[in-house]
Image (cartoon, rainbow, N blue to C red):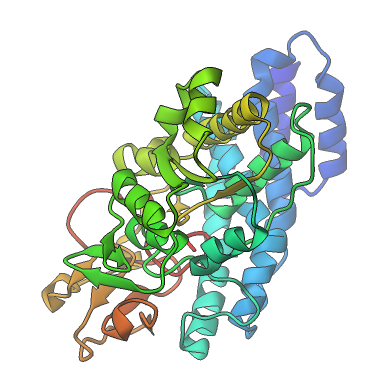
Length: 407
């Protein structure tokens, strides 16, 4: 019966049926059957696909200000990426997907690109080009993050920075925190815009206390201090105040209750660096969606541990940048050629960074890095979700560009 249901709903969805209420009723009826668990990934795919189609059929408006697209993304667009991720994760769990479900996955991939990425990428890039600078009226930039934390004047506070945890994954974590039976208190979610390029060096530096950021020898400095790793960021924090510190997730997560109390005795603000999403993306990009749930659960359990061990309830969870991921191989038509011949300071699949003001690339967006090295550098990003053709692997998981998912 389950096999027949899954096959028939898959075929109906591939053929464009909108009878979602009937399909959802049938799936809900199967939830309590003794065979549901054996077919859970397929049913979760079907449920997520219907939510995905409902949202993707709403057209992306054109001619809006960039700030409107940011607000729309934080309000509703992010759910398209959430359901796309859930569909992909559950599809990866199928040992031998039936042909009908493979066809459904092909339709999901096609519509994700045609109805969402293509129109949103073009509309947002047009708005950015019209805007002309990497500033958003009424929207916080991530370089104001430390000031916001400091203004709260907490006696003790943790900042958890999860490398590459884009907004939609953060939103899922937020919902789990709200529903958690152990964590009591108030919680809220907000958003800010990362620096360009939307890359770890720049994003991590922007979240630290600083007056001036500088770019030199492919490193980002905060008030002339390196920010390259946890030890360097610890030095930046301690230079601001001796009771500030930075620590890696793996180290603090291993501490016992007694160790934690000893560690926190002389500290008021601790930045914790967590790296699950970006590490997977950089080393095994096909796993980046699969590890999102791992990242959420690790952070949730860490907050629980610190909360119960120390009775400290002040936490910020944020990220240095986001990312874009597509299961499908990227078409050659989506790549710009000949950018390597420009000999820019840095050339990546999603940005070109240069101090040569003469470098111009057609059909791109361009911004002066006014907050870094006094605007001596500019960044060029491809339109929408296109890529610059460069050497090296990694085409499905990318970041560094100006898209909403990345920034």
